[in-house]
Length: 414
Image 1: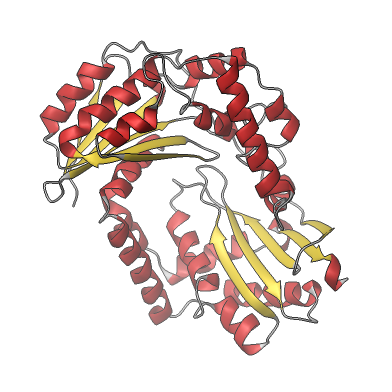
Image 2 (image 1 turned 60 degrees about the horizontal axis):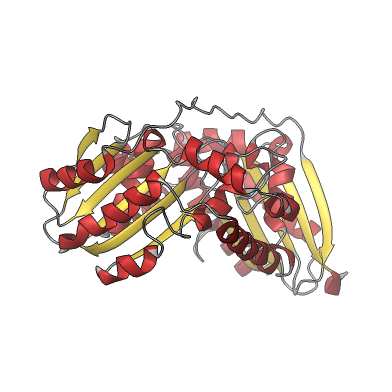
């Protein structure tokens, strides 16, 4: 059981602090509640670009990384559909350096045309390298557009179109910053070898005077229930064809989430999974096959991804997958297989929580989805999953009309 204390500054900044005397290090994590789902469909890629822009220097500090390195720290950041996250790990005695750096860039960035131009160029190159010119790079653009008709998950975090990123202006970056990068839209967590009250004193010293931004309405994006199967086939210059089958399923805070995660583990995680044992080991249809959940806050996808053996058609693999899913939905999972999968999930949580950096993010994340009780209790949620619950959820998810199938065919095999 990890104990933390929660505070809220007058400007709306949420602060959670967890003491860990076993380590001389500390992680400072700041989660901003803005991701690609907060963008307009005609102006995408902004949240990801802005993550880069945040490292271009603040009003008073031109070189964020070099100042942090002087204090023995390192840092990173990432953007998802739902959030943008920044974190620093450093010796606990130097926590104030990280707070000083983060507070200064939350207060005001060094907005200038050259910095923006530089980061736009970086993101454009990333877009080209990873999504346009890389084998299978456009898969997520294709699959998300197929699966989501209304929800802004229908474009990936990098953006829907390269032209959207190229057209971003300096004024738009300022507007974005003063709307979303405000203390009342942020969650700060501090985990590590620091005394709670001392950490809070330093947080107040550096963040109390930062003005709050506008009050933002809580987003409530919903994808309508899918009522007809969807199919897309494309041809590309890639080494091997791939089949993707994506099934809309529950949100992250839905009571069924943990059973759905267990379903994905049983079906397609590792060589002992059912899909691997049937399509790889027994039928020799695939070289590899996996099943996983997309991991978003709102409407998730359960995705099956498989590569065929030489001479095997995607149509044959598709039918074998559907046959397996039909049988899976009709029969209860055995107690031994279920318990083994639950134990694996619980062990993963325990291992993940050994890292103060992981705990700092998890604490911020569960706060962001209004589910702080899960920070310490996820293992209990997995333990509650029953074979009957799995069968019921599987029958709902694996309906034929709930399926989105992408045949990503190699020109070499056609």
